[in-house]
Length: 213
Ligand SMILES: Nc1ncnc2c1ncn2[C@@H]1O[C@H](COP(=O)(O)OP(=O)(O)OP(=O)(O)O)[C@@H](O)[C@H]1O
Image 1: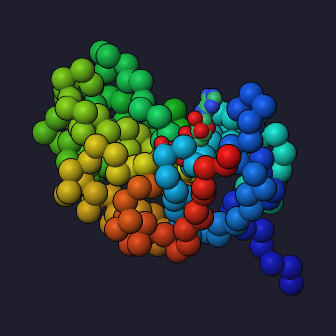
Image 2 (image 1 turned 90 degrees about the vertical axis):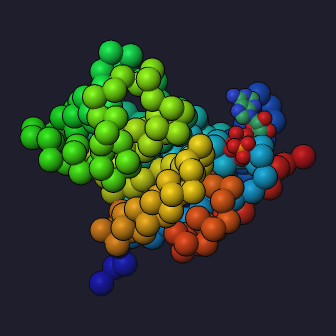
């Protein structure tokens, strides 16, 4: 019997900004229900790797395979299977927190997302702020809403850039538990982080990046 392809395989990834290499020959694989943390100092290329994986940066060389098939931003399968939170989200200024989640769930094919939206708002501690507009949320609350938008949609691979950013202690504890639940449900998690405790609690493996000269 042939072994199933890993959920995500990165092989010999290279990325250049202008002529300067910031990622050189990076290789790793991530299985279903597993988590990998990208760690390393500021400027070591963590965000760049995640951007290559979600298709918002073009690698100079190497392969990125999702379930054995080349990942391509335009491919429907990637939009369906990969939930990502890389940058701060731009929210619609006149849609409430609950309406954002409702919209995202419906866009991904859930025709009756009300219960899911309520559960997630509760999970991220925004139930009391459900009817607030994004402009009236604190920066930590906006971050919680952004995380919720990645969790309200179907996913096989969750890609998160410093998900702990701007969360309070309780928020990071929730995040750690939630990412472990994601793994238990079979979702693969790839995240960049500067939080050693989060990495220790969630990641099966760390990939250490170093700034290139
Ligand atoms: N759009 C860009 N144009 C040119 N250089 C860039 C660009 N984005 C990032 N870089 C450079 O690429 C390198 C890697 O940046 P990247 O943001 O991937 O690092 P990082 O590990 O995510 O850092 P941090 O921990 O600060 O988030 C840095 O030297 C950065 O200056």
